Each structure stands twice: as C-alpha cells, then as structure tokens.
Image 1 (cartoon, rainbow over the protein chains, first blue to last red):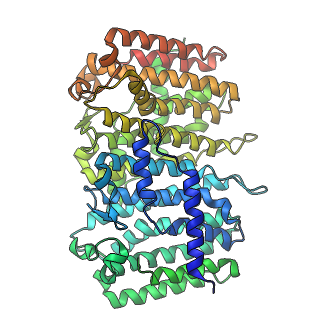
Image 2 (cartoon, each protein chain N blue to C red):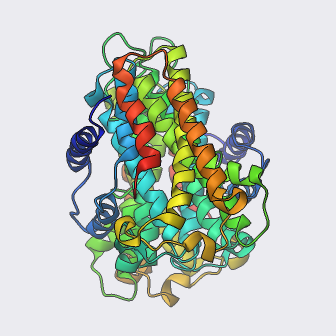
Length: 297
Length: 297
C-alpha cells in the first residue's frame, strides 16, 4: 500500500492551488460577499471530496489534473452546505473547524448570500472542464446533472430536511440511513463517480467506483457520529457531544457504539471489495477507505 | 406587430406544462421540501425569463420547444432568489404575488432549503437540453457557465449584497445602476442570450440579443421601482411603497419619477434598435420590450 499521509498532503496542496487559481478575488462593490465565500472556502477543509474526484479519475487511468475544475466545484458545494447548515435557523453552530462560523463573522444575511454564491459559482467552475480529445463531449453535462442531483432535494438538501424534521423525535434506523445516504453520502459518492466518468472510465468501471463511493459515504457518516462521542474538541475544532445534546439521531444513538463500529468495518470491507477489478491506480481509493475510519477529525 | 397578450398567454401555458413535466413530485421522506419548492414555483409567476429564452431562440430562427429545459431552469433560479430575498434576515416580506411568502407557510429553515433545492435543481434541469444535430455540443456547458455567472456573485447575488449594504445609506446613481444591472438585469439578459445561443444564433446575432437583454433588464427594474410608487396593491399582489419605507435606493428616489420615465423610454428604444438586423422572428422580443414598461404588475 501507498503512503497515505503524503498522498493526502500532496493532493490537498494541488487542490488548494487550483481553488486559488479558479476562485475570484474579493474586488469591486460586491467584494464583501466574495470575502465571505473565501473565508469558509479557505478555512482548513480536508478537501476530501476533491481528492476523491482526483482519485476516481486515477483509478480508471485518467489524468488527475484534468478533473480539477469539477473537483474544486465539489468543495464549493460542500462549503456552501456547511455555511447554510450552521445558520441560526438551521443547526445554529458558532464554531466550525476551530473558527467562528460564517454568520458569526459576516452576519446572517451575508452568510446566506455567501452560501448561495458558492453553490452558484460551483456550477460555473464545472464548465471550465475541458473534454479530452476523442472523449464524449456529453460527459460534462452528464456529470453536472449527477452532481446537481446529489446536492439537491434527492440528495444533500433532502437529507438535511429529514434531519431537521427528525430532531427530538423517535425515528427508526431506516430514517437514519435515509438521512446519512443523502446528507453526506450523496456528495461523497458523486465526487468519486464524477472523477471516474471524466477520467474516461467505462460503464462497469464507473459502476464499481460508484459502489465504492456509496459505501465510504456511509462509513464517513458513521465515523462522524462516533467522533462526536469519542473525538477530541481540540483536534476536531468543534465541540463534541452536540448530537446527544440536540437529540440527533445517529448510528450510535440507535445501535450503540460497539455495533456501529462493527457496521463501519463491514461497510469499508465492501468498499474495498468493489475495487477488485482495478490495478494499483486505485490504491489511493483503497487507502482513503481506511483513512475514513481512522481519522481523528 | 403581433398580438402580445395571446402570445404571452400561449407561452406561459407551454412553460407551465413543461415545468410540471420536468419538476419532481412531492414524494418520499423529503417530500416536504419539494412541496415548499412547488409552492413558490407555481405561485402565479409571469414566466418572463423563460418566455425571453424562448423568444431569444425564435429571433435567431431556432426551435422554441428545444430550449424549454433551460427556459424552465431560469424560472427556478428566479424563484429561489425570491424565496431567499423574502426571508426575515433579508427583506423580511410577508406577501409575494398575493400569497404568504414561503417562510410564512413552511418556516424559515424549510424556506432556506427550498431555495437551495430550487437553485440546485435548476442546474440539473439545464442538462436535460438536447443539443440539435450538427450543432456544437459545447453550447450547453457554455450556457450553464453564463447562467451561473449571471446568478452568482458577479450577478444576482452580488446585486443583492450591495442592495442590502446600501439600505438606509446615501448612495450615488452609479451604485443604483450597479445594483439594477446585477440584481434583476443579469438574469433577464442571460435568459434571452441563452435562448439565442441554444437556438443556434451566430456570434453577431447573439451579441445583438445580448444588448437587447441588457437594455430591457434595466427598463424592467426601473418599471418595478415606478410600480412601487404608482402601482395598485390589489393588482400587484404585494404592498406598494415598500421601497420608500425601507429607504431603498431606486431610480425615482434618486432622479425623480418624471426623469425615470424618460430614461425608461430611451432604454426601451435602444433595446428595440438592437434588433434591427432581425426579421419578423424577433417580433416577440420587440413586443415584450413595450410590455415591460406598460405592465401593471
């Protein structure tokens, strides 16, 4: 297996440089909203979704740097969702990645607009993708459609809706799974899938990568739930125990900590098995699967 | 000239039917957010932006029905912007098109998510556009990029930012023009321009339609400002005089009512002149230009 730590560090650097190159500067009369957008975008995110997009392209033998516009756009969508989720009318959080949340710095109106701006700019950024010669030019609208589906009411937005509707209520595991699969799972799945499509993967390769993405998306959310119980506030950059305080429905709250960890290990096993058809080009995806349950933040 | 009233009625019907066909039904666990999205989408909008997209395609000899996915997507973006603008942290409006605003019916959290969902779904809907044979497949990502630019921090979002930052302050005409050109102008301009591009227009045709779009976008906003002074609450479906109460900067507040009407007539004249190169296929655009300053709501 490869050295994951240096791989993640290298890729994070590539993505941060690309974000800096693609993303607008805070200039002109409306510069304040760009400043607010940049505040959250460059607040120390792990860049997991863009890295998955790059690794998805590499797994099918595609060129990693070519997919950077879409990889970066996925980070913009992730960032917009965090800004809106943190707003007082939603989760009402003051701290994110160890820093005051967007609305604490810029006010609620600006934070709302910064989120709207990031979501919109994400779709502009995707169109910077250049279709490689001899590839189907329809790949980019296809990927834009899949990402919109994963981010919208069928995906992330839908998951957030059911999550806020479930707070303080007794809900079953089916509902927990519905929320997980959409709120975080959908965007993670489409991140790696879009990389495989734009990297020129065949239908069976894309389907295998999609299965991998679905399983690690689930594992990621279970890991988040566990970190909210066992994590370290200083390392995480946010308070732990928030789920329990807000009576959030999580894997541990429904199934207990022990069983949740068992399920998580099974899920990661399925993710790695889905990659059986691939050669060493998929090693980054294999390593990331393990990283997801071992991460401390 | 053509019969504008029946033209607008016919096109509104085509667009309403297409929206019904393209837009999801409120089903499943996250069905509530789709219901909230539909509430505002089918609240009696004039469908001006989709109609402009169809008319832009017709002006260059393109097939109107082909551009419906993008035309409808423009209405979704317009609707999302109204929902977010009406929120208490923004303009705090209770009434829109004679009905309670989205957050008054569904609550603030759901209204925020309904707006997010509409913006996201808009980009999915655009990808339903089918490139006609012998046309450049790059036209659809190009149009998606232009629409995102017009809706984002350089356009609608940027205009809204400067608008809320200017409330209660003395601002100059330059700032008023900056706000107008972006808050409503940008989306109107890109509506007609995207129709001309997807309809297969040549570069000079698209440039002429773009000029038309810029001018009617400006005229539209001046008309809105005038309606807020001279309009009828019962016809408009919202309270008049709101701009003055909130000390909003408008053309009439800076230049007076008389001068604003003069400017509006000049602007419409420039819009119609930009269409000189076109034959009767551009008659809908010519009629719409006049409708914009004669409308009562």
